[in-house]
Figure 1: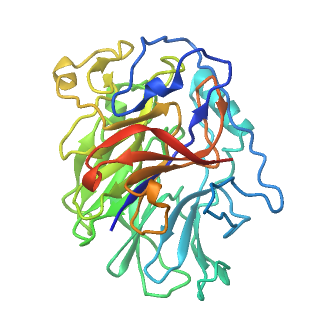
Figure 2 (figure 1 turned 120 degrees about the vertical axis):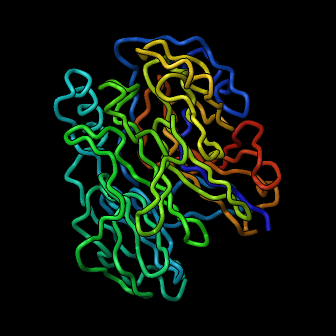
Length: 395
């Protein structure tokens, strides 16, 4: 069986705003330019215009894009249950309070892009019982959550990654709605009023023995002090009952997408890197995750490139920082990944990694944004990546 890794991203297509070559910040060996730190970032956000009737992403020959569901409120994550039911986590960013000038700017930008609203805090179930591509049943599967994002079914329990805790509910196969109070399995670091990177993705090992949750930083570069980042910018591992919790890997500013390479025990992650070092720094990336590894944040980036803005530094920890496997370009806001394990894709795309765009992207790159589906060549057993992303579709 051949595999494809789908990574949720939006790749920035540069207009004339920069004469830099954007390809330098993509690939297994990106060329990192000198940092250009400034007081304020250059911000070009995508306009939330929605889709016209009958419109769809432009796909290459051999692919068809159809609407499966619409009218969702800030859909964030998709999860497929064993019976084919599709679950959609709906939640939105909350306005920051007490963040000073930068907090005010972030709120203004995100409100203008439609990202901030009253969070729906629910998971919606979509059922297409006859598998004809038309949803017959749509129900509220769970509600009254707290900015839900990650989802995982392990045995008879359904797990949810709320922004402040991993919780679970008893699950019965075929259920269209779950009820009862959530059981808190693992409290997570949370900063009330300004929680920074708030998404909490979840994934379980195939045998259900361990779960993993991604916890992003509360700020760009430990702006509130390193003590405020305790337990954050990390992937946590824990047992299904919440015991045995430990940091599996750290130094990952905003880890979002999680996936296990098929046929292996190797965990992969997509990560959003830091801002305000210029349009071409720092590349977002996806990488295999080594147990116990440190990936640099906040002291360094892309291995041991020291970020001089962070004071005090930690040279001993920086000396252990490892570089990620593959750069996705600076400020592309790579949101997730998925391994495709079927054989319906054209032959030229098999054994490649595919990047799928987010519908909304907040980018700090001084470029015109285009959401695209792109493929990156992958080596045997997804052990290496090479080449420049090949465009498959765009918004």
